[in-house]
Image (cartoon, rainbow, N blue to C red):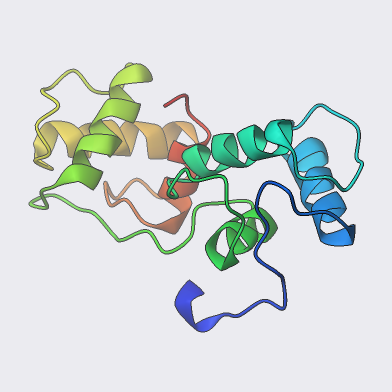
Length: 152
C-alpha cells in the first residue's frame, strides 16, 4: 500500500486553525521532532506554521505550512513518504537533492549535476554503511529516512 492509498481521518490544518487536532500537531512537532518550541495551545499561528514548514523541508514535502494527508502521514511515520527509488543511471532534481545532502556529510566529492553515477552511488553506500543499512547504493525508504536526518 502506498501513501496515496492511505487516507487519514484528519482535517487539513492551516494558519488560523484551532482545536484538538492543532494540539496534536504541536505535540508531534515538539515532542518527536523538536521543531515547535511554544506552548501547546491548539492555535495554529505563525510559529506552528514555521515548524510545519521546517518539518516539510526535512521530509522533502512541499514547504507550504499546510498540514494535509501527506504531512500527517509523514508526521505519524516519522519519515519521508512517497519518495521514489533512485539508483545508478537515474537523473533529475531528486538526484541533485541527494548529491547536495551527501556532499554536506562529506560522503560525496563529485559534481552536483543530477546524474546518479558511480560517485553518487559510493556516497550513498558510505551513508548506508555508517547508518547500519544494507550497502547497495540504492536510495529507497530507509535511505531517504537517513537522508532526512542530515542537514539540508
